[in-house]
Image 1 (cartoon, helix red, strand yellow):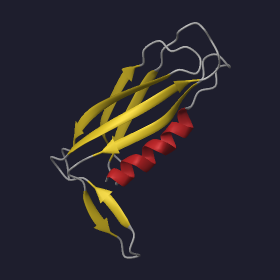
Image 2 (cartoon, helix red, strand yellow):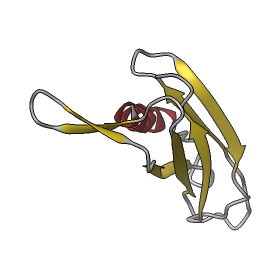
Image 3 (cartoon, helix red, strand yellow):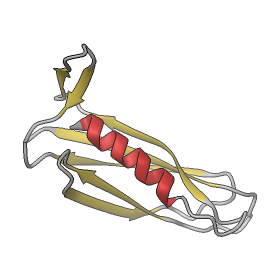
Image 4 (tube, helix red, strand yellow):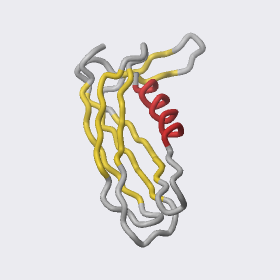
Length: 117
């Protein structure tokens, strides 16, 4: 399940990068997913995928960077969705960054508990 979350999030990141001009471009530069309770699933081809089960805690960190060279601060709304492998959204979490100048980054994290298997 962690693999599904990570690949879906990265695909969405690329799809939602806005282009409003050189002074207000925001992009997600890193998504980190950590869980001490993640388990390993060995695929038939021998590859290993991590997954979490109901009740497991997952820490998710997202780094957002503002492009350009603006000296006037502007914030962005960040949204992360947890998507089950069969396609339904299990959780949506949003927050605002602090006002960022051009080339500055902001990292925030939250903890999510898997509530379904």
